[in-house]
Image 1 (cartoon, rainbow, N blue to C red):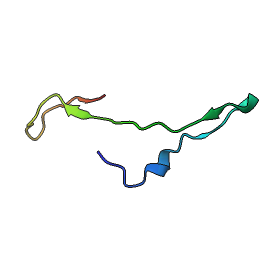
Image 2: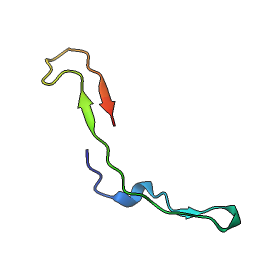
Image 3: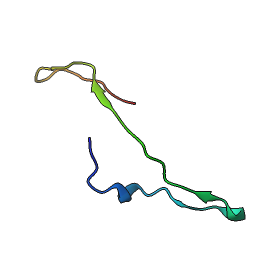
Image 4: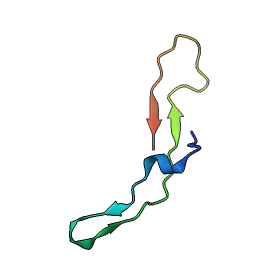
Length: 48
């Protein structure tokens, strides 16, 4: 999966006491329990 707009989940900001929170680079991988699967089969998706 790819987001075309990385700013939609902005995680930068300021906290009380002057602490600063910076956005970090992240990666997400999605896998399926069956690959390939057939129509009607139940699947489990795992995100890491």
